[in-house]
Amino acid sequence: MKDIGNVTNRMTFINTYDAQSTIIQGRGNGTIETEDGQSIRWISSDVGVLSERGLIFHGIILFNNTNSENLSFLNGKLGIYEDAPEIHRTIWLLD
Image (tube, rainbow, N blue to C red; front, side, top):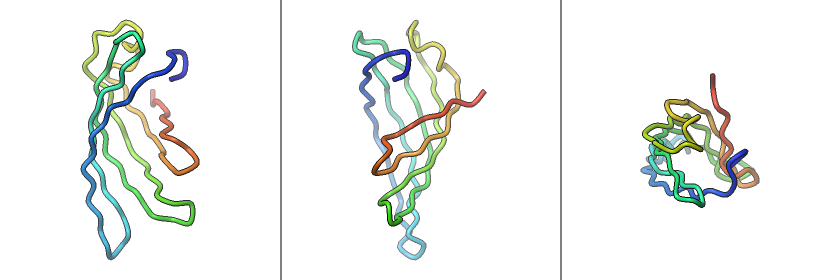
């Protein structure tokens, strides 16, 4: 994570696949934890499509519930993200 270092992102998703449209709708939640044990929880919602590049997801994520000094800048922040075969989940924070 930029300006933080290596993190572990533990996540659970429930995806619903629509065979007629080949769209996948997902809802997830999880925890990002730093190497020194600081953490922040998150929830997200996304839409995935199967393309020539593979399975591609675009979504929105809300960070919440941390007492961590290093991750406190994320508290209450909203972000958008892309997850694709050649791009592991990349999140852009919104102001």
